[in-house]
Image: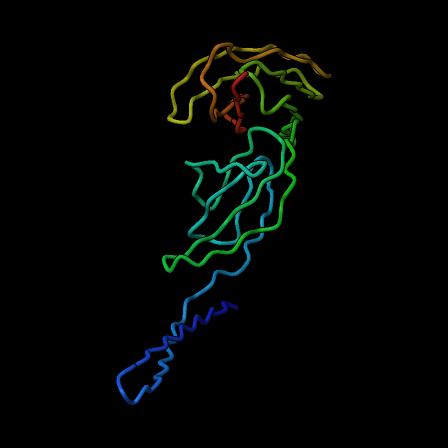
Amino acid sequence: MNKYLIISLLLSLICLPASAQKVTLAIYQNFLVPDIPIITQIGDTLRSSSPIGNQWYKEGVELTSETEQNLTVFSPGNYKVTVTYDSGCSSESATYNATETGVSMIQTGDFTCKVFPNPNDGMFTIELESTKSVVFVLELFTSDGKSIVKQSVNHPSGTQQIPFGKTSITAGIYYLQISYGPNNVSRKIIVKSL
């Protein structure tokens, strides 16, 4: 439930002619105060309970361009979010200690795949496990859909680790697509600055 902050301003007007009368005027103004935001983490994303007015902080330092409801975590640390309404009233969340997920898991009826580390520097390991021989096509895409690296892998049954990725790519969000036959699955990959 939203609360209202009542600001009262008392103005005293003193008229000092011969009568020396004192006049008091009370002015009340209501401002909507945001509920205290609550941070939740799903994978590598922090989410504020408020859909508007967010400003994110890490270790007490304002992340100037991070004003959306969701924040992608590129590194672990202590995060806060402040919600401010147009009235200027604001509320601050409790500190949230965010962790990197480290391993992304893909599991289907045919195979299991682990991708680690995630976040990474552009190079990562894909661990494939399957009970049958499969040809996988691994492809890394930019967030706007441009393919930057592609590789076919003949995977025998069992477990296999494949180094994959590309060095010297810009920090940001990428998508790994794993195709096998007519099927494909994808996973978000985070590349952070060195």
